[in-house]
Length: 271
Length: 263
Image (tube, rainbow over all chains, first blue to last red; front, side):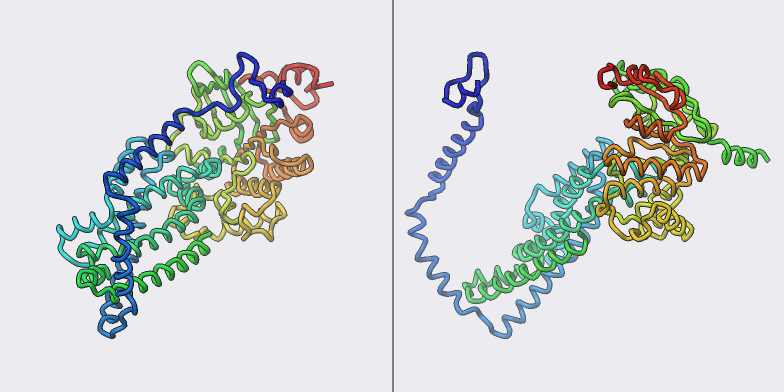
C-alpha cells in the first residue's frame, strides 16, 4: 500500500481520496471573487478613477504643510483634546463598571439559559450601531455636549466588553471552580476566589483595549455634537483650514500612542 | 440540652453510611448501581477499580457535586442526597476534598488557595478584601509547615510542581477542619515516588487529626500499603470489600477483568 502511494497510483478501489477537493469552500472563493469585481464596477472603483483623484490629493497634502501653530488655535485644540480624554476615561470607567454584571449574566456556564439569553440580546443590541450613530441619538435626546458623547461611548463599551467578559468567563477551568465550590463556598465566594482570579488578567487587557478604542472614538463623537476635539476638527475641514487639520491629527496620533503605552502598563500590572 | 447533645455527637460521629445509592447521568445507564457502604469514623478506605467503574462519581455524590439519583447518604445524621442550597453548602464545609491533578486556583497564591478552604465560613466582602480572620491565617501557616511549604505562602500556585500542588490541595482540604476527607485520584498525575509521598502525607495528616478518609486510587500497591480497608468497584457496583490482606489475585481479576496482566 505504501508503495502504491509512493509511486503516485490512485488508492485501491473502495478507499477514500487522501486529499479530497473541498467543493463548498472552492465555490465560496469563486463567489467572493465575482462579487468583488461586480461591486467595484458598480461603484466606479477603477485605476482611471484613482488617477483622476491623485492631483486633488497632492493639492490637499500640500496645503497641510506646515502645521498651524497659532497660539489661539493650539489653545482651542488643547481644550478639545482634554475634553476628549475626559470623555474617553469616564465612558470607559462607567462602561466597564456596568459591563461586569452584564457579562456575568451573559455567561452561559453560570447562568440559566433565559438569563444569559436576555443579557446576550441586550449586549448585541448595544453593539449593533457604531458609536457615532448612537451619539447622534443621544445628542437629539439630551442635547449637545460631552454628556451625549459619554453616554454613547458607554453604550458601545458595554456592547463589546460585556460580550468579551462573558466569553472569558465561559472559558474558565471548571475544575478550579468546582474545587472552590466543594469547600462549601457561597456563589459570591466562588465568583471572588474561583472565577475572578482566572479572568482578571483578561478583563484588564480588554479594559485597556477599550480605553484605547474609546480615546479614538471620543475624537469622533464631537463631529456630531457629542463634545471633544471632533467639533474643532470637523469645523477645520469645512473651512479648508488643512494646516490646522494637520495639527489636530498629529496631536491625536500622539495621544493614541501614549494610550498604547498606558495600556501596556495596565496589562503588566494585572498579569 | 438537646442542642448540646447533638453538638457532642456531631463532634464524635464521623461515620458515613451509604445505602442503595444509584446515579444515572442518562436515564437507563446507571454509573452507580445499588452501592451500599458503611465507613467507620476513622482510618483510610481505598476505593480501587478501573476507569469508568464509578469511583469518582461515588465520592462526588458524597459531597453533592454530583447529585444522586436514588438512595441515601447519611452523614452527621442528615441525608446528603436530600440537601440543597445553604444546607448543602453547610454540609460541604464538613467534608474536605482533595481533587485530581490541577485543581488549585492557578492564579491565586498558595496562601490564598489555603484560605479558600475557609470560604464556607467567610462573608463575600471579607473574601473580596482578603480580610480573613487571624485564626484562619495562623492555621494556614501551621498547615504550610506541616506540608513543608512554609516558604511558599506568597508563591502563585501555577509556579509549583505537581507534588507541591497536591500538598497544597491536601492543606486546603484540612483548612476546612473537616470530619471526612475525600480524595479523587490524588496521585494520578504524579510520578511514582511523589505519589507515595502524597498518600503518606494524606494518611499521616488524616490520622493525626482522627479524620476518616476515602481515597480513590488506581494504584493497587499504594492502596494496600496505606489503607486499612479496600473497596473494589467494577461497572458501578462494589465487588470487593475487606482488609488489604484479603485482597487476592482472583479479586483483582474480578475488579479489573481478565487475568493476563496479573502475571
